Image (cartoon, rainbow, N blue to C red):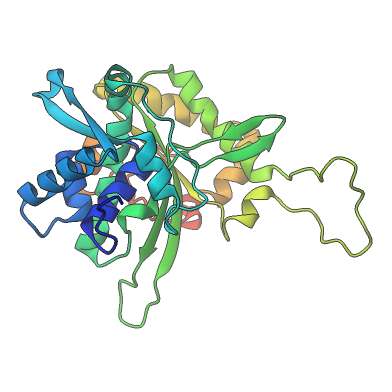
Length: 305
């Protein structure tokens, strides 16, 4: 029998590593058990490793930082749990070298998710560690798909007396300058295609009288199309402006006018997101990059500016 604490930190630590793909000791600690000493988290991770559920790699260029990731056995165990059932399993690193080469981007995704979780705790909102879901597959037909780096679920409480809360969702793209600005900007068009995509009926099936009218595929998953957040990392100030300029140019495409009117698309440097928290007005609308807004801004308020 695997000695997993079914009601507490061991289970959550494994679930986080399976869902997030990779995390440092400090990231796991803040996500899973910020109220205890970090030594307890270290012991928990060592225990899970001894049971064959997780493995680690040391990054010498980052001060010999330890990075943890799930083993195939750990993925199989956690995938049976209700909180992870139905999620696409992560692409596992075949060895420590493969894990090391993937660490830069994956840890940036984890850091961004952690920032939203910490911000929610500070503001009294709701964003649990497992409300950050990397690599959710959204088919476009013909074998194509849109796969954001992460999907965020975030429950925002009312800020004024008598004001109800709101449920926010976001597709998040983490860019570490591994592709050119033009390819980054092309992702806006890909999400616009997802917004309009209506799945075709199964081959050989004819519509019957009384069948509901076909609808966009995303409506089966979300009541509203999630907003789109671009987070820029691993590039200096000049590179950030170049990439924002490319996103702005893409947003001027007349074919995207309707999409931009209904879906907020914002961009911010990761350093700014981490410095004050993602709720700060560090986000720039791609259609009006001179503005600074919080990520929670509505499409109507952005259009009205």
